[in-house]
Amino acid sequence: MNADAEAGERPRHGGHQLGERSESTHPVAVLPGGESGAVFVARVVVIHVLSYLVAGAVFSALLDYQRLFQQPVIRDYMLPFGSASLLLSLALQVVRGAVLGLVLVPFRAVLVATRWGWLQLWLLIVGVGIVSTPAAAPSSIEAVIYTRLPLWYHAIGLPEILCQTLIFSWLVHLYLRHPGGLVKALPGSLAIVVRAVVGSCLAFLGYAVFSVTFALVSGVTVSGGQNLGLRTQGMFVVLFVANAVVLGVHLHAITGSVSCRRRLLLGLVIYLSNALLIAAYQAMVWGDVGAVYPIFAPILPALLAAAATASALRDRDSAGSEHG
Image 1 (tube, rainbow, N blue to C red):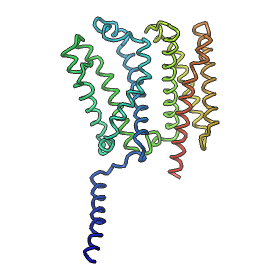
Image 2: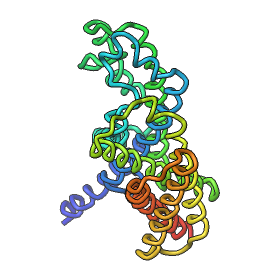
Image 3: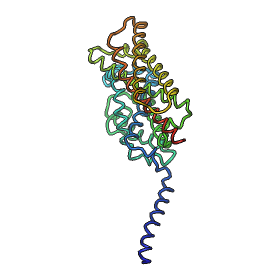
Image 4: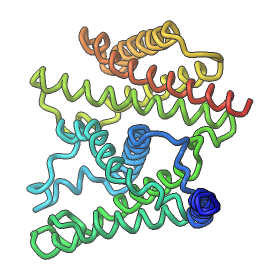
């Protein structure tokens, strides 16, 4: 009887000790909100796409990629700057982000276990993904040995790659260290601004996908000078700012649950405002209003922005209920 009692006591006592030891040696084993790997991957996709867009825009302007891509040897290696294939790559960054997220799923607990997890992740990406890649990719040791690319080209691409991966690593780790999510940790007004900008970025990706598809279907030759000129890109800057303002006002004004009617209404507002802005911009800047683009181009951006905003409102409401 006593032996049975001791046998019954021992596993419970041992299990308790193991639980305490696990808590002390792995103090941050609780992953963000206990969420699934799919949610983590989706958030990594957003972080990758945003960091990629920001770093690409900044360094392409600072280093004049359009001129660099026309240099001898480089022009035979890289596609023309601003070509349809390069624009389509913006949409394909979603796939790259998903791959990164899937690879990182098993390592979440390792990364979140220390405040230096961002540095560990960045050094891993730099070592395996940039400098010592199995393939002869630019800026890698293999490329220096086996390709005709000049050394200056290997060096000139490093600032963008290093900065983008550093921002990516820092944001992924910051997100893991804040179980409620990055935006939830921000003050109310700043959180609205960030959510609005994220939604507007997704709308911008929608325009990139549609514009490339529209050009390919129409048989239009896309040139870097024409596509990346101020007259063309100015329209997308206007749309980006307008969508950010509309989404910010919506996030500030709307409270309560997100109904299907509200999502449809927001999508309709974004669609109509974008269609009118495109037509007005074409008339004032280009002197001609196309019949197809203003009607069909805003459809995908409106859907993406409305979906992102609905998700942001759900996150905000869940955060409010938790604090309540």
